[in-house]
Figure 1: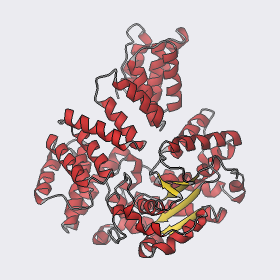
Figure 2 (figure 1 turned 45 degrees about the horizontal axis):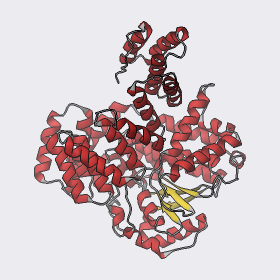
Figure 3 (figure 1 turned 135 degrees about the vertical axis):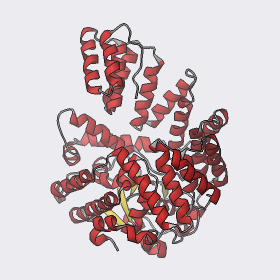
Length: 527
C-alpha cells in the first residue's frame, strides 16, 4: 500500500514516506518519531505516524495519532479518511459510517460511498446500502466490483434472480473477474451453463492475478461438480486452494499451540474466576462452530422463537479481544488465557457493555435473547464468558468429512485461511473438537452441543434440550423456520428459506479417493 500525503517541508517525513512505500514500516515510524521530537505536535507528522500504525495493524495507536493530528489543526481530508478506515477495521461501525457519510460530500471517489454501503449493510441497514450499491453499479457499470456488491446485497435479501443478473453484469464488464464467476457458482441452484464452463476455462488460461484465478478455479470446480465430473472438479478445487494457501502462508501449528495452552492453563478454578454478575439485561447466545456446519440453519430455527432475535454474524467479540490484546502486548508478550486471567472486573464489565452497545445497533426488537452466530467465536468462548457472564454458547457440529470438504470447496477469504489445505482444515477441526472436549471437562455446563445431522433428521429432539439450556420453552414456530423473513448474508442464504433437507450431506464421498490428507489429519474423527 502506498503511503501518501504532503510532506515536502519536512525531510524526515519525505524519508519516512519512501521507507513506508518500500514496505519498511518500522524504519518509517522511527523517522516520523525523530521528526516529532524536533517538531512536537506537528499535524503532518502525527498524521503520518497514524497512517503507518494503521498499516502495521496497530489500530488503537493509529486512531490515537490520527485524532491528535486533527486536534492539532490538520485539515487534510485524507486524515479523516484514514480514521474512518481505522474505525471500520476496529468494527466501530456506527462511527465509521458517520465519517464515510461526511466524506461522501467532500471527496468525489466511488470508493467512499462503496465503503459506506458496505458498513450500512453490516449494520443491517440493507435498503439504504442497496440503494447506494445500485447507484454505483449504474454509474460505474464498467467496474465489476460494484455489480458484485449489489448482487450480494440482493441475494442476501432473497432476490436471487436479480442477484444473478447483477453478477452477469459484472462478468460482462470483465469476464476475467473470478469473484463474479464464483458468486454465480455459489448460488444453490445450478445457474452456470455449458457455455459458461467453456468461458471460464478460457479465462483461467489467461488470468494472472490470483485474486481472479483462484475464485475462477473454485467456480469451474463447482460447475464441474454439478455435472458429475468429479476428478476434474477436484483438480480445480485443489489449484484454487493452493493459490490461496501460497498467497497467505497459513501455519496450522499456531492454532494447535493455542488450544494446547488452553488445555494447560484453564481448569475449573480458572473458569470459576471468570465472574458471574450479568452485564446488561439482554442474553447473547453465541452459536459457535467451524464454517459450513449448519450454524445459519440453527440460527434461523432458533430465531423463529418469540423470545429470540437473530442478528447474524457480529464481528465485535473478536474486535474487542484484538483491541485488548493490542493494549496488553505494549507491556510485553501475553497470550489470550493470560490476558483473560488479568482483566480487572471493571474493565471486563466495560468491554461487555461495549459489546452490547455495538450489538444493539443490529437489533430491531426488545426480545430478551439475541443470537450472534460468528463461527470462529468457538476459540473466543473464555474471553466472551469473562466480559459477558450471562452469555450462552451453542456448539453445532457437522460430520467431520462433510464439514471439512465443504470448507475446502468454498472460495473463502483469508479470514478462513485453514480451509486452503486438506491437512490444515482437518487439523483445525481436530483442534476445535479438542477445545470443546476440554471445556466440557472443566466447565460441563458452559457449552451446549447440537448434532447437525441429528437436527435435520429430528429437529425437535435436538432443539428442545437447546431451549432448555437457554431457559426457554419449546415453540412449534421453530419448525416453520423457512417462513422467517430476514436478510441472510451467508452461503446458506437460499437453503434456510427451504424446509429441512439432506442437501450437503455426504458431499465428500465422490471425492473420497483424493482426500487422504484430510483423513490422516482427522484420524478417528473421519469416517
